[in-house]
Image (cartoon, rainbow, N blue to C red; front, side, top):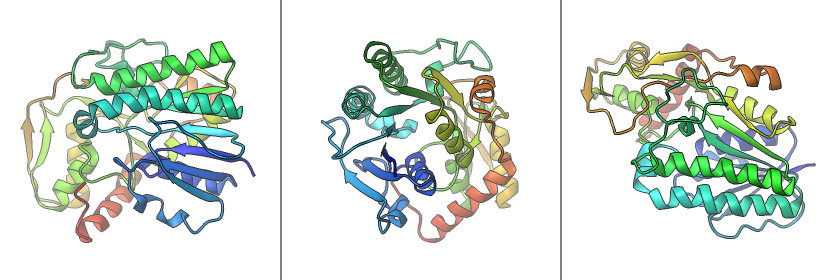
Length: 317
């Protein structure tokens, strides 16, 4: 049975990755400092003999006993609310944390996949964004703590690949949604659903015409799994290219929920990208991957999850 270490295991994406690797027959070691993750996301795994959990901050030295075949580094605050509130932790997990895990991978002779982001493209001047685009990022702006942490993460990962010959994979993740997202993490879909479910006005930033492309979590996890098992060491976009204005997403949530909420507008945050759409040509060619779950289907599943959370009193983290 192959062993995989997943950092950020109690988070939204990390917990779904734990499920995936358990289902595929792996021994899974989850690691999380619970800064933004929640044990409720993985509590169903604790009774399983093939799952182990370590409460640990990967920005400090990381040791895992025994052999390791794979490492997936998904530890990091990922929503604007989180990384603006925790800028130093965000920079540390992208730099020190990545360095620690690359060292562990080298010591264990394990393959490592790091979770990068579409935010490395910044407010893009190329549309849609291909992996060859270098980005348009303000390194000293408020979003720079996340953007530059991920850009450094990519750079040091490639350095370990070229200098040490380490087997590395880099996934650039675009907007993803699904069950286990936090209601109050500041991202568009959970914010809209919470506001609709509680009969509050739905808040748009700017005129709501900035665009995003939303990928359902099971599609994303499938793409990550395929990338890990591929032989390609350079960055690969994984996301859904079905691009829509944020205002349209809000209107779809209103239609689904039947809420009487009104749309209101607030100023656009500094350096907020105007457009975001992945070019997934490389993922199609390399991995035979493309998203399968439609936005209508995925949003309906996510709505049922958020509805149950609100009915239980919601989570205020």
